[in-house]
Image 1 (cartoon, rainbow, N blue to C red):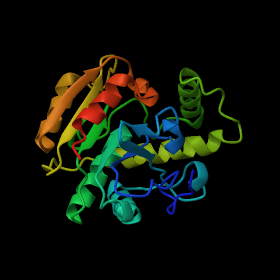
Image 2: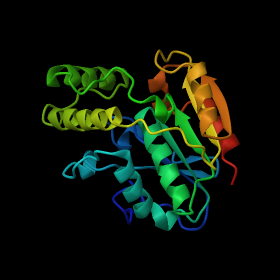
Image 3: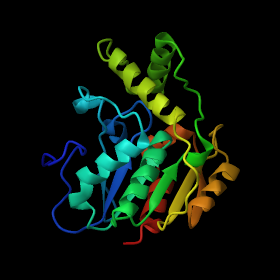
Length: 242
């Protein structure tokens, strides 16, 4: 594995002009949350994106706004945006992927497709279980529960306060984010999960207000996304026209 030339990626993209998929993590997590994903989906190279404030960027301050994130992320990844690429995000990661797409479109380097998973449209605003006024103890308990469900084992005690800090910052950023709907030039694949209690098929249909959209509902709960099930990778391979 070659060391990435930017701190935004876990690894340097392979040489050449092959297609890549930039994958954005969900709230409170880092790029390693996608470690169960394959390095490639067909001919598409999967590149998890690392945000400030987590994992090897833990000493950096998390972002306060999606606009600031998108500006910096597009600038950092600009050397790779000349090749065919798409973006995908899950839950909050879908909002990050959307913000990235808007900014990349503004600078003339849009992705071939925006994939969203388990996400309401950005204009709907804040939603979900977590709230910024939750106690440290309750957030820590939820982080432990998710880690247990994923089979990751217990979060080390010394890392738990850092994880709580990142999740709280992400939730606050989402709380202030409800931009008006604006149609993209980029086609969208909106993916839902039949055991998701927060995002229904009707909610997925609202992505049509953001551009040409294909909607899918896969079996599983939102955490199923992290295992890269065959149905999901098939959608990515079929819908990523490069």
